[in-house]
Image (spheres, rainbow, N blue to C red):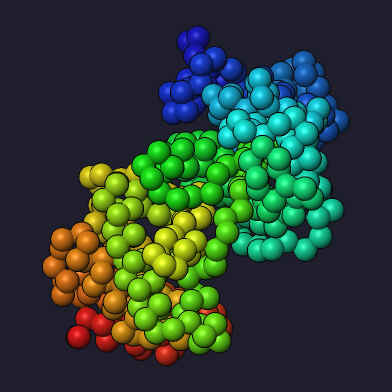
Length: 368
């Protein structure tokens, strides 16, 4: 009938990820697996089996996924441009900030390759999908003034749902460059993206951020920090208003925990938001639910010194800045928080930072 399965499959991929060039499945697999070992002795490019029928090369499921990633990333300009550099191997790097000189680019790239190869030692933080390193740059990055750089190595998506989401949204590094540029343009303090990298073979990504001077919000809530009560109340009220300003601009943070908010100044309180892999700009679809989810993320952690009244203070300041009903905001946040904490209890029986005390205290917010 003249129907080509490879071309038909590729047309669907082109329509989904908007690839400029058409590639057949065989070319995708050949690029993804250049040194693929034979599965059977008769597995040859044009071999014939005993029945006289042609036998096509076999491809395992991982090879298909790697081929899809490589094909999707052709629409992403990760090839070195002026101001970019490559290490001559699988990794390709870009420096979107544009303020680093050649020496700083080379030093930062060398540190990144040490982290990827495991030569940087123990990471600062390790999660299911990423590994974060803190790198001290001797002498600083001369043109930007940054002496501390945070390097995050992102693992490729696993599973069909995560892969489809990755193909639809594109690489995380590209999204970070765009969303950080928009946030900075709108006056939100966020760390600059100094370098991004992508490994076409494994699908891993790499992002280097500029360090921000300041402390996380939990530090000012801890009794051991000897923070005065007036300062604590001022920081919490300003935090609620700053989150409201972020939402009024149309942004919803992907993981707005107290550990992703940096207090850069105490008088007057000023904040910087970090960890924007899942930050999105939302205007219509379920925007109120996503905003309330940010408030739940702020209140679900058990922080020493952070009382129930302090959590309510953040919500009241947020509602006042947004111009919405305060009691309704408290009831909705308490209901969503109870559902979230119930899932946390089912997943881990009291072994995390979400203690039973915080659960009980937050569960009574709706009645106040």
